[in-house]
Image (tube, rainbow, N blue to C red; front, side, top):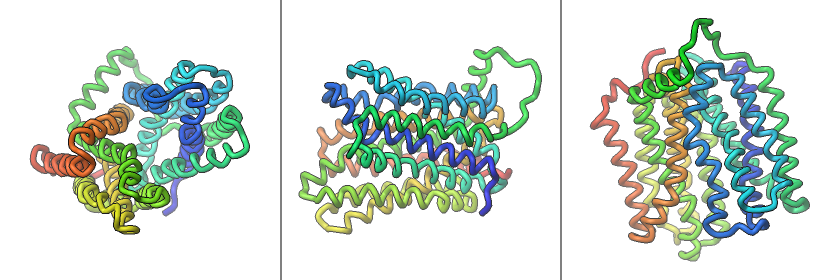
Length: 394
């Protein structure tokens, strides 16, 4: 299907920005932090602290883009993507690196809610989830390209040189962003004070059931997924599984996730967002216990494909559901609140998973995560009104 020029420009900008950002995160960042003397928990904090930035600030940047327009905040985000990598060559201690990572996290904290709000505003009628799926496919592509490119560069370059290249690549983001139009004309009327505007936006988001429902479900989903990312390699190695098979597991998972997003979005547009999200949650719940078949060779890859499909069903439909239900004046705020809850799941997952594994073991933890997802799906249909939260006519 043909897409508009602004849609394609923003896809390009996000792909370049995310690819460059992921180059600086995996495997480059842990190697650089270790070379500076970081180890153990502090190294883990350095790697994860940029996620904490988004946890607290995504709603704020979404609200500010509602007030002043998406394009200006995309330019500001591009500024952080392009400028911060050049500062890494001046870092000499782990503490300095922690501060830089905290500030660098502002780039994704801005781009997360603002790009999704932009896409939701320019999406075609009755095709919101599919458009979001195509956009997120390009975004996820950066998670594949970035680490591979950084690993290849590290064969011949030191870490600071790679960070400099990351900065140069990130400067390319300005080209498509400068050619983006604003999504809609904002009325020239007397605005409420900024603090009042923020309060109104948070109140509106808080009173929109779809925001908390989808954000909560995505948080639960990310808790399960990031627990698996953190501990499956250890679980597999203890079971005598080849590291090659573990790598194939995560590659297949991400490939199915990326390729399946437009398909999942299309199902959301046709079947309704809520049924599609529920199907994805149940698919993920069913696949988690299957991870225990580690000694069955290539059958081990079956849950990887199912988990990728589950994510493709959940995420585009969830974003579309919120864009369909929240006040258009506070769309960025809604995207920011969802992003905040996603980041909570990413941060909490490895921590909660580690505690549960210590107390109950791997197999019991997988079952607990599966039951948690089933419970979340039951809450959708038992506590909330599906008719009120399902896809609304545009």
